[in-house]
Image (tube, rainbow, N blue to C red; front, side, top):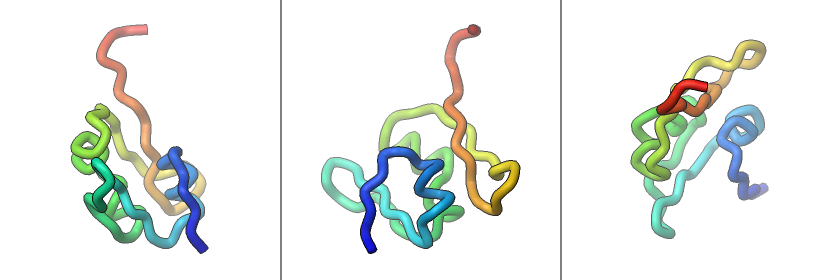
Length: 70
């Protein structure tokens, strides 16, 4: 089954394999723990994130890093 998801946390929970696209090309493909890294997400989407372990599941958990205080 193929699902196209725009939420990396949802993909991390349910997918066995993830492909991240950049400009219509596969940037990286593999297991969620190998693919959902801070450097990959920054490279693909120019986002500052912190990748941690999900508190109740054995998978990555992506948290945006805010540049400015709340």
